[in-house]
Image (cartoon, rainbow, N blue to C red; front, side, top):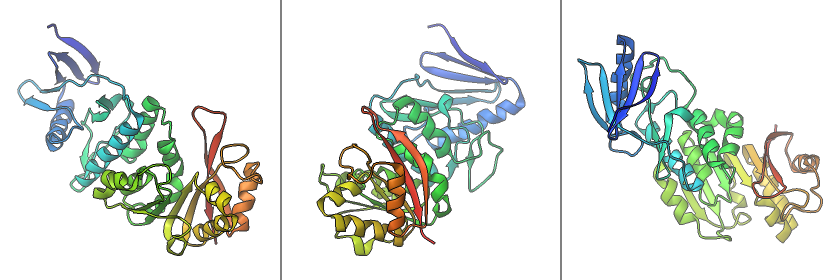
Length: 326
């Protein structure tokens, strides 16, 4: 098989032959980058998140590794959860990629593979200059959204909300009411938060699965009715997404009590509900202004529209509101 040149850029020639990628540095600076890549390929070779390292040649300034085709995920939910797990592994090992964007992300059976580790850091040992100094999560989630379309809106919502809750990253608590499979708790755990999820499992069993996905990150999950849990609602950040309308429709007073508890017993309340002919939306919620009025009537002093996202497959959109009380 003939050698195929994949790329020539910034003093590095990359070619592939028989399933092996060879990177050749054209100068000493790029050779240092290839040696750095080798460190991280070795550090993560027991995972599926990097190409398998093959060899490094100091005489010819070359690095050989497994070739990863540029595939596309076939299952957006599996791909999303695998990305969150990958970020957790990097965090646990003290690794920052530094340029984890679309060109440096490949997919293999819905599992991500990160390439181009030239600028990466062991965060507890060093601070090498990085092309993109923000957390890897900030750069990789848009790449996942682009290839999967994020039909459940989980990643787009998290990205739209990070700035409102980042003060609590690394130490704060997050309570997700109606957690389903717990993906928001997984993201919170990656950000260093203590995450708790609650779900009544009315749609389908999920708590055991959520624990399997995210329990090893420290997230806790419980089966229960949100209304029964009202006395225990207390966290730095409380989330209630697309669940409140069902509570209200069953018993309006319970709906009001849940809202009051979420606002009063959190530093930041993240709220999403249906309005105006969207599913179970209460008749009085006709506009966004009605949602703001409702939240303020139940204790919020500040209400901000954080992000509005179209619902895939139908003519509707959902807004996440950030509510706080002084």
